[in-house]
Length: 377
Image 1 (tube, rainbow, N blue to C red):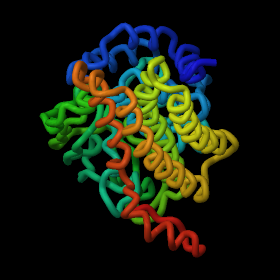
Image 2: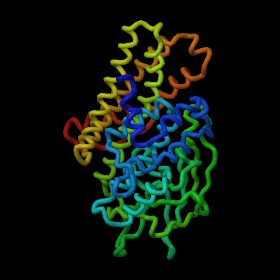
Image 3: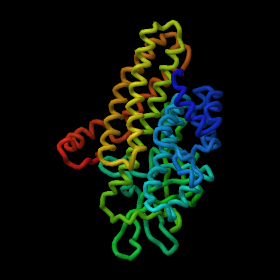
Image 4: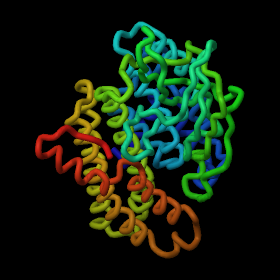
């Protein structure tokens, strides 16, 4: 079996035609701010990847999904990063579905069946908050909620059909407030998108600013959590964060794998060097797949979340060794005659920039090893 065959086979099985379509486009075209990658992903049925087959989704396992993200990352890092945020929103919605009967399941089915893309307005980028901590203000009205706030950067900002956001709503019995997830149609009055991402790296992820100005969200587009304000949503937060770490790690490993693949196809590179890079890349992927199998074995718990962070930081360290060596082995001519090698090398640094950072998690992980509950800084 050739390098990345397994991952590309998973991509072809679950999203037929997408790998061929991406391969037909130049890398730097896919990575541009108006690249075709997100549209190709939508056309292949990608939005339903994590939705159950009973709800017209693809029903991908965690193992299949992380292989898909690595394959996407090897073709277009921007697309892999952007779609991870959609899957993060989908996994959070699915995690809110306790009984399989209710509005949340109808929303999951609608997203999957109609190939709608969800951008994430959750607070995953704000230090000291959980993923469902309210990031926008909400005012109850007779017709629903009026929501205002800003999310930046927000991947899929210009292609999204829906924005997911956590808000506080009055409890059904009128006593106090509870958390809810609002699904906000992109065409809603008061929703606007403006420029934010000025870097040329990962520009294809459409990570711009989304502003909500007194946007009306009707009750049928809100999923209640039955969790009081300030309470910990342990299970939902854990599910969402584990999926986030799993798929984001696989995506950036895919970008690094694009460099490794170039080395493996270069007969002028000594066999020992090629095999050394192969071992390092596949060893990192084995750790990611081990985490995916844990997710498939049952509902992620606190220990799974801790392991997802261990794996993510371990892969960061592996990429810090793999990528510079791959660039060196490809040589100066490859670097000077094409933007692709330098671009891919720069993109792989992005994994270290996603929350939660290793430096902020040092104390919480240390406390967790001493039997304290795991918190995310």
